[in-house]
Image (cartoon, rainbow, N blue to C red; front, side):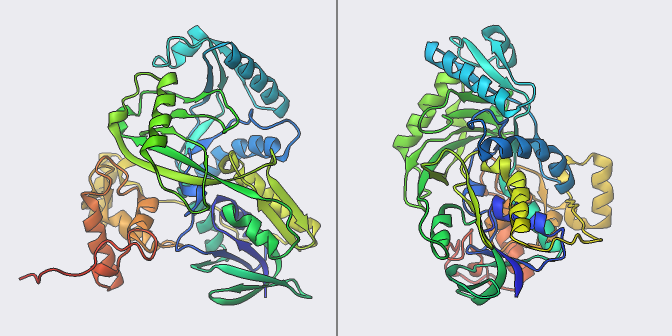
Length: 474
């Protein structure tokens, strides 16, 4: 019998496990995919929002501002890349100016620090490539950019290191209420827990309905993006938003934490697992982006992708507790920003339900990785002398070594695919998108796991790269 079962290991489930791992509890995380951060948490704008969007008085407003403040110290402790570069919401006409004023007032009510409206001249000084017809903008210096899947992975790794269990490829199919708590039916057998936390992302309504009467509907909405080469990474200095509309926060143009430029997202209702991109929608995204930053060179696109977010008709997160069952549902933007604050709130709800929170004496929240491309020459030489594997560059675009790939195979949550290595080390994220390093990673994984290269998947289990050997070597 576990104390807590968390359903879903996106950023919300992972952050909740991280918080619960501080206490003497038996915690299990049930993730239906073969890795963490396989849903919305790996395919989003990667923005730490300042907190002026949500209506004052909502959970979303409070948890956004709290999560933003937590991001810096957490990322330092977890060794996750994060840059507080600030954001602007640019106004280009009378309507936009009215929206900027409303967002400013809302942000002030929400307690967003250092928020201010800046003139066209100040906006141009901050963003020289902004469109010439800009009139003013809302400047939020506390906004930032982050690596969303590494944030998720870091939370989960610390949780596992401190005793939580992660069961991957473990899909919950039914939940039965018992005298002691709940019995969860999964494809890996029955799992019993006193408390359940529903963090199942776009499926959180389905999980809710396994336990309680139907209470809410989720509206899966796709956001399509262009990721541009690092040659475009300095096109903007901050996250450049346009004024939001009914479809969401609008199309942004932003540097990424890795030095690329991202453009998007769109907003179309889709099936829950539909992460396809289309030429029509991406053309719309690009046209809207050029309204704000006309000089952006979209020919430098190295990848398109889409993520599905769990929208709802309610303009807030759907967070509630019914006895020993906690819903963390409808976590749309700014869910990534709010995640650590949502996790703390979830722990408080469990406390209200009667869970015993006895802190561990030896809890370790630190996470450290070797990052060869951030070292100086002296550090690199010393590292290679200690282990020659760090002297073999596997990913030329991002200077990732064989030593780092071998390291990630021995972390608390090792990868099970080529893209799993990518999320942990940064391989395959450069201009060639794995064209050079991909085959070499397949060889390393086959060697280390003692399997044939045809058994190595790209990402999900069924996504094989190779099907058979065509000829024998000498």
